[in-house]
Image (cartoon, rainbow, N blue to C red; front, top):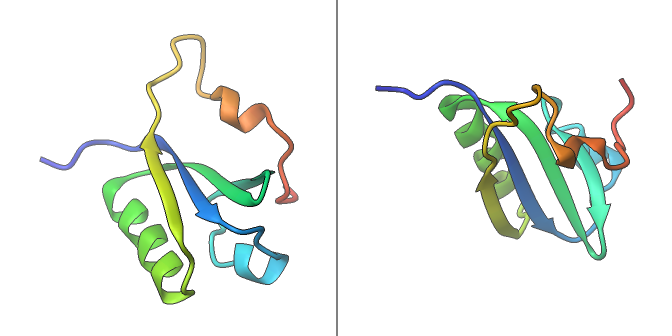
Length: 87
């Protein structure tokens, strides 16, 4: 049984530029020190697609986290940090 969409954060080593970030249109990005954190709501298929894109680009994955649902609404605290993707 395929679980429904969930909020994920994916931590990647290094600061990604706009061209690299364009490979992840469903994800919001923020810099965290020397790392880039991608956050977005993904189903299993989309999650594997994001991971495959990161691998194809030769990016070093540091962490992948499935966030617990927020009982107060659909926006997680990770989404409230500065967003590098316009719109």
